[in-house]
Image (cartoon, rainbow, N blue to C red; front, top):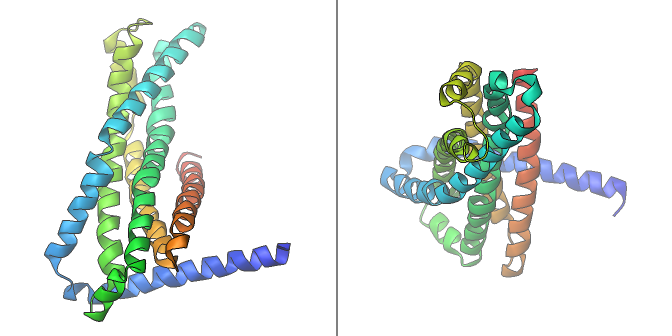
Length: 256
């Protein structure tokens, strides 16, 4: 494909996604016609899958990363007086960057792919068409609960990731290197600011909206059973790409 063809394909993709997003926003006019209990049930189930079921994986990775960062810092930078700024280092690496980013990657890999596959399968089995025939706004009915669930789950998982990485990582690290616990938590408290909490919330909301939005988009795009794995792959890869860009932009805007 020529460069012009690739540019046109990219442009068409952006236009189609914009129209899809616009249609969902317009659909909010009909939200009063949806049954609250149905939306709540879907949101609760999605929250369980996205948040609760991902806890063991999130906690395990947080422990490993927290311990690794603390051990590397105390082993390799003792001459700089690492005890004085270990809190700054942990907040910078874990709370600001790795926590939100790794959480988003796990959610995309587990929930994003599952959402795309589920919707694509429902579309091919005519389940979505059946809902439309009885007057249900399927885009709002399907996308809205998943956005709510993803936002709540991602925010909670990021907080849990940070707590486990700091406390669990410190406990593991003390088996190899020594650092007074009072000194560790004092520097951590001094380094953590209200701004970090706001940025965590901002990232959670943006990720919580974009991940299910993009995953649902590619699920709806499926035209045959053969295309399901293709669209799922596209949903995962393109969501990852966009999340990396968004993460970098947020960090630059808030911290620089």
